[in-house]
Each structure stands twice: as C-alpha cells, then as structure tokens.
Length: 79
Length: 322
Image 1: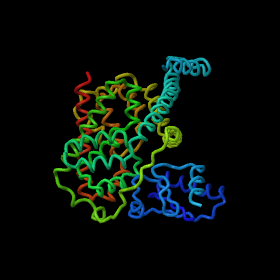
Image 2: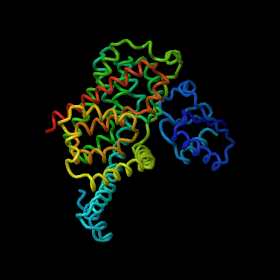
Image 3: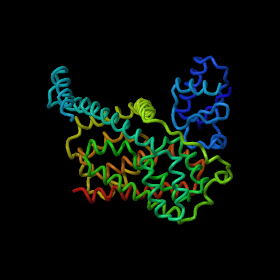
Image 4: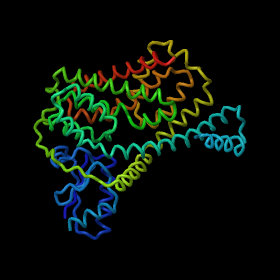
C-alpha cells in the first residue's frame, strides 16, 4: 500500500505525515509513506486544499489534518 | 457576560497579589488577566461556530458556482467576495486555490475578488471585533472589506493581466471533478472541534503577546496620550499605520487586543483598523507564496490595489466614527 501526503510543506502537512506514520505503526499495515510537495503533482489529484491524503491513488481526505484514527479507517478501507 | 471574569481578575490581582488598583503594574496585570480570559473565551466560541458553518461552503463548491456564473461578471465578483468570507484558507492553500479557480475557467478578476476577500475579511477578526467593539464596527469592517474585494477584482479583471500569470498555471491538466465529501453533522462538529483546538494551539502565543503589549500600554500609556500623533488630526496617520503594518506578521487574533488598546490610547479607530488589515491581509509569507503563480508585475499591482483599499477603509472609518 502506498500512502501519499500531499502538501507544499507547511506545518499542517508535517502533522498529517506524523499522524500517518503513527497510523501505519498502529494498524500494522505494510505501507510506504510518500510526500508529494510539487504543486503540479498535488493538483493532478484535483486537490485545492492541502494537506491531503491519498491511499493507493485514491484521494481519501483533503483540507484537514486527519487524526490517527481516521487514517487507520482509511487504511482498513483500502486493505 | 464578562462581569465574572472582571471580578476574578480584580480578586486575583488586587487581593491575591496585593497590588494597588492605582498602581501601573496592578492596572496592567489586571488588564492582562481579564483580556486573556475574555479573548480566549471569545476565540473558542467564534472559531468553533465559524468552522462549523464554513464546512458547508468548501472552495470546491465555490469554484463550481463561480465557473457557472461566467455570464454576469458583476454577480461573479459579488459572489466571489461574499464566498471569500466563509471560505478562507490557510495561506499555504493560496496557490492551489488560485490554480484550481483559473483552470476551472473562473475569470482572473473574479478569482482575485475571492483571493482578496478571503484574508481581508477575516472571520476571526469579524467575531472578535463584534465581541470587543460591537456590531457597528464589525459591520463597517465587513462592508468595506467586501467593497475593496469587489472593486479591486473588477479593476484587475479589466486590466487584462492574464499574461502576467506564470505560464505553467494554464498548462496544467488538473482533475476538477473531485468528489466533495459530505460529512454528517456529527462529523462536521468533530472536525470543527479538532480544527479549533489546532488553530488555538497555533495562535495562542501571538494572542498572549498581543495582550501583553496591550497590558503594558494600559498601565503605562495614559488615555489619549497618542491622540496628537496618531489621532484624527494627523492626515498621514493611516498611511503610516499601513507602512508599519505590512512587514509585521501576525494573526488577526493576536492583533485585535492591541487594536483596542491603541484606540484607548488615542489612535483613531480607522487608523488602528488599517494597521490590523495591513498586518493580516498583506503579509510577506503570503506574497512569497503568490509569487509562485503571479509574475512580479501582477504581484506588485495586487499589493498596490489592496494597499489602497486598506488606506481607503482607514480614512472611511475615521470619517464615519466621531
């Protein structure tokens, strides 16, 4: 599973990345976390509000810092 | 509503700390305790309520509405400026929003109306102004901010500045058909709560510093002491306030406690508000972000027009409020 964190690198994006790492560790899922900082790549997903989280190329949420529990839910949906 | 808070502040400073009501330190500390509690109560209520309301107006919806309304440009500007109040964004989303709007076919001028209204008519500032100064000041603030956003957007649209937008903005192939999530009321309440907590965590230091400076002024600067310099009598005061405010960077929540103290010390209301708008709407970090999509010339025009708008608001306020 590939989890992408979309965001230019502001504090919210960093927080979402940290939450994603924690969610992966907690859920025990085999997942690779990738940061996408290039604006063109971010927008190719149609996202206008950052940070966003993309799992297996599906946009799961954008414009908010998802909590660890929310991310675990997303991971389970994509398993 | 805040009487118990004042009683608590009096009790803490005059009884527990044993400071005199007449002393400078006592008066400053009392102001600091009272204002800190009052402003944090207001901030919590306002941000929570507004975040919840805002969840019904995501920018993705705004973009759809604006792209559909291309026919009537004037209505487009008005809509964009109004939607700018309820759909503000964190400054790091300014670039993707700009690209997303332009790509969806929203005219450049209308996009600017939105981009100007969003930081200028700040919802937290609006709530705090209402809480601290009353409905009249809050209303003039919104109306003048909206007019600036509409008029500047129309002017920028007429100037045909498309060629000063960085070329890659038009070359992007983006997916504008993203699905907008539709959370339940409960999910919206939880999201709003999380957002409020995060935002307060991020801005509390600005707020406390703002109140501390205010408290210091309260104790040491007598009423109306600044009136001869920054009062209505000085026609350059608004201009100076804007020039001083632009390089400073703070959140609206941190600057408003200071605004109330500035007015007590004799700074004219309009002058103090232009200062606040300059600090919040024309920040250097946001300009650096916008530079990624706007060529220097367009960025300069943007700053100039918004700057003139803020000056106008300052003079208008000073003229209206006796």
